[in-house]
Amino acid sequence: MAEAPSTQERVTDIGPPHYEKFLHPLIKKNYGKWLWHEIPRPGVLVHAAESGDKIWTVRGGTARLISVDTLRLYADLADKYADGYMRFTSRNNVEFLLEKEENVQPLIDEMESNGIPVGGTANSVSQIVHTQGWVHCHTSATDASGVVKAVMDDIVEEFRNHRLPNRVRIALACCLNMCGAVHCSDIAILGIHRRPPHVNHENVKNLCEIPTTVASCPTAAIRPTTVDGNPSVEVDEDKCMYCGNCYTTCPAMPLSDPLNDGLSIWVGGKVSNARSNPTFSKMAIPFLPNNPPRWPEVTEAVRTILEAYAKGARNWERIGEWIDRIGWPRFFRETGIEFTKFHIDDFKGASKSLMTTTAFKR
Ligand code: SF4
Ligand code: SF4
Image (cartoon, rainbow, N blue to C red):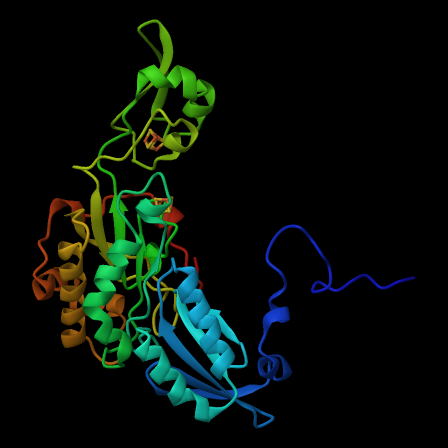
């Protein structure tokens, strides 16, 4: 009987191809047999295997949405210096994988001369992971790429060096559905709506199916109603959490509001369980206005938090660990951020639903 095909060989029409197909040959050859790694300079890693093989990684900052020209540039650099091997990290950095150490510096020179900053490793700010923003998603309360570009332009020096107490991971999600990692990043920028969806009763009867629209609301805030003799829906504002789920189902319920949409800033989340448990971010600034194209209020807030952390944290403390040590009130004093009633955490469900860490024991 013929053997069943392996996972790599099996062809399906869903999901990505098996990653092993794209591994660098050196990585494949030494899989599971790597001995050590070090970071000789910001943006460069070297890994050594039991066999004596070494592979160099050069990391550059890039945007999540990139043009065909930029992709071609990356591909040309990969062909020239890295035998065609490159990858993107989960935080949207581009990485080239090199067998020859002598190619590292020429690659760095060519990346920098083409405007690709080299860095993002170890105790630095890595590239900001972000969501779709105004470019693509219908429920966004703010832009994504635009805010990220403005913030990273302002703090790019922290991408290029290792002078921070520990790594700082920044994330942006353009609404509270948070397709980005805002719940578990050191500094998080989160787009927020502050008004419920506006129901366009004229269009409901043409565009929406009422039972599906009512069922789409996670907080049961939508009720069927009749307006001018036509079936429609109404929203209980007290129950609405501005998630935009109904708008996905019913295009006659747009959520965006130029005056009331904006951004909030959260701090102290992390995924790592080194030294302390993984933590969720806590809200530091409840609202900042949308101010394109350079979002100065947001860039200033991120810089302020980063500078206070760099000045006050001990070596290897992440932002959340620094805040835990000095206390939440002192965090506001050190950063000059105003403390408001919105900072008081009165969500009673958290102990049941959110106390989840890899180290959690009842
Ligand atoms: Fe859309 Fe919200 Fe995800 Fe942004 S975070 S891409 S607005 S669902
Ligand atoms: Fe319900 Fe979300 Fe629509 Fe508000 S925005 S009515 S919570 S589905």
